[in-house]
Image 1 (spheres, rainbow, N blue to C red):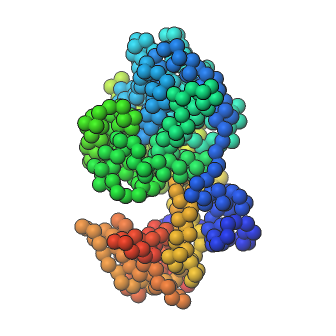
Image 2 (tube, helix red, strand yellow):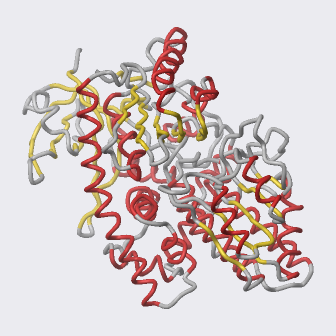
Image 3 (cartoon, rainbow, N blue to C red):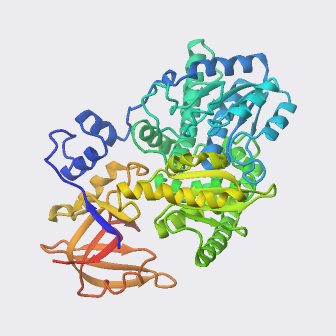
Length: 574
């Protein structure tokens, strides 16, 4: 059973913009916003929180090297990654470099043949084209050996990234990463594309100071839609500077300036819809990611840069839509394969490691995330490769750091990397049993400190009062958008309410609408998606229940009505 944890309300904040409900100010306070000016900026449609790019270690030197290479006519190659953050990062910096020189190219590795990060064989091919400067985006922080290989072939190397570092494997080159221990940048949560944007910002400032108009402030601002997509897609904190970048980026995105995205949105029947962070997270990002999962992500970069004909853009957009349809089907098959392996036993009870030869490598991460949610424990899926090693991807529950746990047994991996919530690695077949043993030990050590780590929890801001069960209060919550990592949609409870007007929906009656009739009046319409059968015994007319969910507005056919999107229900005990 899911544990409900209520936030402590504390005293009424003595700061905040006029007219903002106390409940909203308390939410801000719990998210680290504890002053009037900070609250005003957080809630503002046009926030101002941003940081000087020169505070990033090595950024000024990197800007100098990039401009000098472009002015010399050196061939410059942007080396990215195959996920949405990597694709947007590559598109962003490639677009910038193309403003400086025509002698530029990009390389997005294949998930299946190159793997994540810099690859020596790929570096050889890049060098063979006469490349003088290699710039990574969204990768490279743990590729010291590959950086040395590139340097040995005569290339200059700049690594720009945002992933965690291995202190014993730091690349010896210009290295721009806010997570560097010697970096004074005040915000460590940028996406890979966010870091690339700061490089672009440095280039724009340098050129403008010299009276060089090849890359203007308007050109820079036009890239913010890519930053917004990456920031939401890569699940980095939607606080501080990221909040500013996403808010401005959503404005650019909704202006439909980018031809390739405009065509893609038409194909998805979203041409007239106002896009928000949910549209990025649940629609745009999966489509961009699908290319790297099923085919090659090159088409994604070409679509986002728009440096091609309209017919080509339509072809790339169609490829993206088709890949996503195929991805969903393959994902379902791969999940079924993994569930069968779990049934056989031996995958682990505290840290589930599934060896699944029939699983599709391109969707293994999504499936691991889905199983992590249902099993509520860390999950890794490993698949054999042609060279006899196992390639793995993992996802982790909140409160546990997957990268930290992998680091504790890092000596048994050929390669590994990632962050608290997700990881990737390669390991030999003979070391898999040792990984199972040591990963279980890692979880046990953490359970000894906090025994409820593997119990699913939801954090509830408060039980809704009479005056908060209104559309006006729901509208005030919209000021907290965009939601995302570290700024989730707040959950509220309706306590001791009576279930009325139950109505099943969906092709398999998997959804349900009902009314939560509360003491004192102001009934709240509720909707529960996909889990109608799970709560069927509680959702009987006349039942007295507690309901937890997201308070919002159901906008349909020009009308706006209060609605609670239900996340959990339990029988009222009072």
